[in-house]
Every structure is written in structure tokens, then in C-alpha cells.
Length: 155
Ligand code: FES
Image (cartoon, rainbow, N blue to C red; front, side):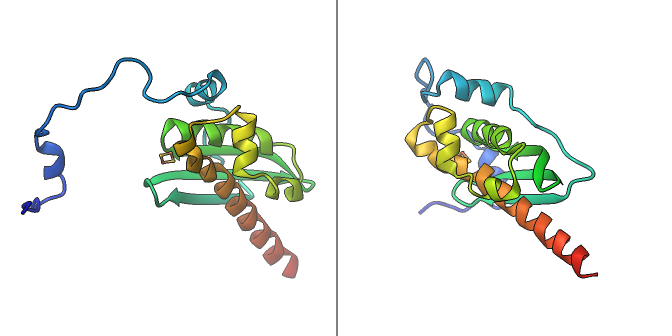
């Protein structure tokens, strides 16, 4: 029976029992557009005066994402994000923000993870869930914006 480590950090101090052999070349195939959005993600950063904000996580892998939107005249005027995630999460989140800017709130709500993957020319199948981060964060930020807007309208 495996002995439990006293401290979870012990897991990282331990030498691996077997050497992990990493094959040469890319482990996953990402197309050039995905690599471009991963290495040069658009709309990265934070926003002080955001109208909507979301912090979401993907329970399947533990990745997290923060996303801010600014809304002017019913359209997404600006968007920023920060992601603690894999290349697929960063690339799809970047593309999500590019696609969302300029859209009306109603249009932005229609943006799906499939739309994002299609715009990127596809991502490896078992990375498809990564594209949910951007679309979910966008929806949550819009929800946050609408709640704040409705509260202000009631006053
Ligand atoms: Fe976690 Fe990609 S593996 S979002």
C-alpha cells in the first residue's frame, strides 16, 4: 500500500521512480494560428473600470481564467483576460476575445466554444474542452454586467 505523504509538497520533492521519456518533436499538433494565439495572445491584461468581470475554472484540469469586459452602447467595447492554463486554453481564450470585441451583448452571448475552435482552424480533439474557458468566462462576465446594469436601473 502506498504511504501517504505527510505534506502535499512532498510529492514534488520526491524523485520519480521511472524516468519519463519525452519523444522528440511536438507532443500535440497545434496549427500555426493556434500557436500564434498561444505565443502572442491578444487582449491579455486586466481592466480597472470593467463593466463585467468573471473568474472561472475548469474542474477537469484545474485551469483558471479571469475576464473583464467594457460595454458601450450595448456592444463589447473592450475585453481583457488572464489565464492560468494550457496552450489550448490560452489560444482559445485569445481568439474568444478577438471574436467578442465589437459584438452586441446578444451576439456575444451566442458565441460558442465550437465557433472559437472553427475560427482557430481546429485544435486537438482532447483539448476541445479548453475552449470552454473563454466562452464560459465571456458569458459570466456578461451576466455580471447585466446584473450590475439592472441594479443601477432599479435605483
Ligand atoms: Fe486545462 Fe486546457 S488542459 S484548459
